Image 1 (cartoon, helix red, strand yellow):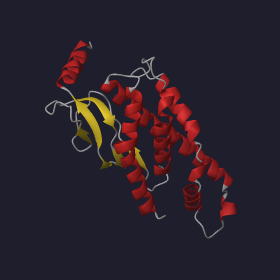
Image 2: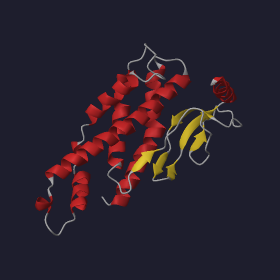
Image 3: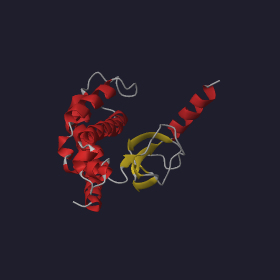
Image 4: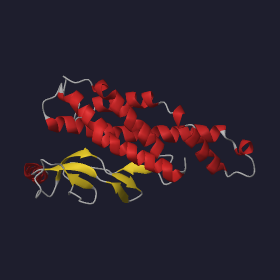
Length: 213
């Protein structure tokens, strides 16, 4: 496929992950966890960790390809970096996604925001995490690569990056927590994420800030 077609296919997969795979993962977690907020936080963090781990795996994969495809093997008529990129695009199936899934689950198990629910095993999310890892890995092969936006609790809500969840307080100025990350191409938002804004979250954030000496 052309670069444009590959990008369109990956955008469609990312959209499907939000609209369907995310909801399937929520249903699995709701069997163990009552609070919708906790469930949504877990899925968001799983998505962020999956992108982080997949990007690291892509960098290591590219290093291995560069070592294998020495300039002498490529030929004088082919640019070396182009040859590396083309090889990666043709061999995305060599990505060890299961290893990345294991890394994501290990990171989630020590994340202080979500590691406390003893009633849930994050292995429940293996299929969801694997799909996000594969999407993120393939997105790194695009030019330019696609990535998710950084999000932090308490940040100012950005209407260009996020939609408010239906249960948000629509006048609250700060993000209480994120549901889904925005997708970025360089500094441009190409797919909005979702965030929850709450007045009580704003008040809690102000109280915490005022308590800092």
